[in-house]
Image 1 (cartoon, rainbow, N blue to C red):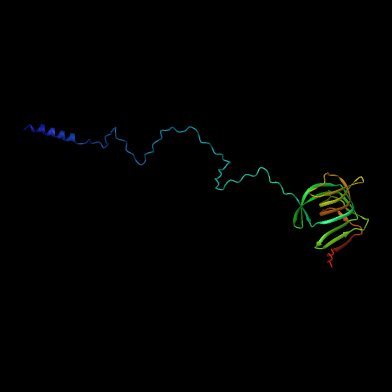
Image 2 (image 1 turned 135 degrees about the horizontal axis):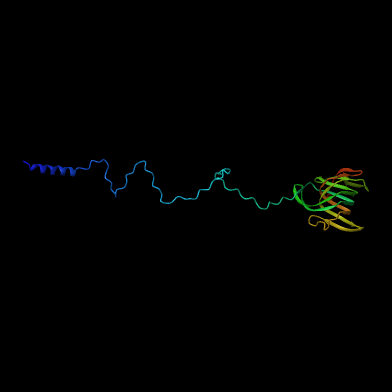
Length: 235
């Protein structure tokens, strides 16, 4: 009756050996990765952090947003030349005199003048005073009609005082140099070769476009309209 007890003990030991341990912790496995949870931090990069601090932005210089507009064209290095001045003019008129004296004279060169709607080249003179003997001025006011202004014969008309500007298409006559008369014919294509402070012309005809400055005084002035006579018809 005593033999069955050892067999029962052996069976009990075998049953206990087959059951898992009573501990609640799972057995650690060296080859299994550690379990991850939702609070796990991301893996740290193996590259060491940079030791250089980022440049500090200036607190007084705000960042300008980038513009989509194209950059402005650079200004030209040399400004364009200014246009040449144009004399006022209007219409051409003619002065004839037996003697013309110009004091404080200066030849200013060839300039543009607007005459009858056209731009032409003229001579520009400046003077301090003018003396004109036997003055006769004519200007066309309509086809075949001229306005004539004539001084008393033998008298001397004057233009003074101050700066006088004279714009001339043609100056033709005799240049009087110490009694020696030299024929001249000055135009924009053939301007005066010298600039002299004083000049005297005799038997002169001057085609002008404008006279600016000074006061013109004409002794015994007569103003009238001259009508050209039509050519006579052949008989």
